[in-house]
Image (cartoon, rainbow, N blue to C red; front, side):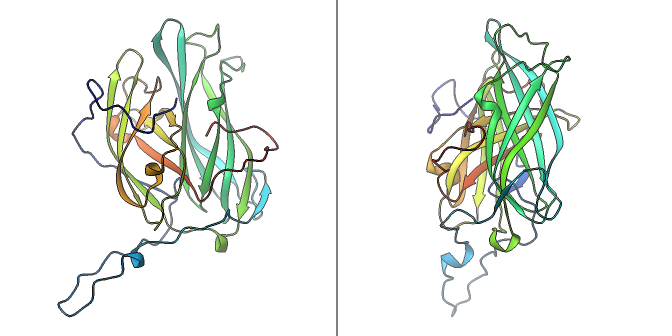
Length: 298
């Protein structure tokens, strides 16, 4: 479910040229917050050119301080909760191998920022038995601001012996997070605008997702991957994808055109224009010390 740092753009892997932009605000992952980065004012004849640094925000240089705890319970009584979810089974085109395409929207109902939240998905059949145990079911989300929603998408191969009809639901577990007081957390957003999806292999439902990203930060941040959420024509979530990209371009400052892979995870019949993309941008490298629970894929 990963993408190369520089996707192959040779035939047949050419990008679609159509540009349809559905605005998706994300704060390092996605934050709905008041206030925007100030735009540059017109320059009068006798006025000096504006300082470029005045229109961007300095990123924190150290990990954010906070209180470790459960993702479901913040110090003020709020917490993280799932607002929408969906899962589809995608044939891979490789015999009996199939993929569970998973998409979930997570909301922070507290007045604290959730920092480096460890999320684990469980995909089960009608009896409640797990049908996949892939490492891609565990992800870490760098930051979810107070009141924000973030999309968390991934794909996971079904375990041996499981068929395409056996996955029926996804359960989300918030393993751990660090709760950061609002005064210690950023308040600006990274925005994405969806461009297009190019399916280069219809049998395995694999292709590329093109989008535009605008970061208000003066510096590039650390990429922890990019998730996408897929919806059908009714607006229902039907799946998701994770591209474990690490190149600096994926969290670059300013406005950049981006392309990520979606391998074996694009459900058939989606509303392509309703796709949303969530860059996971961190202020520093993830911890190298062992975690108390499970290690995230990203």
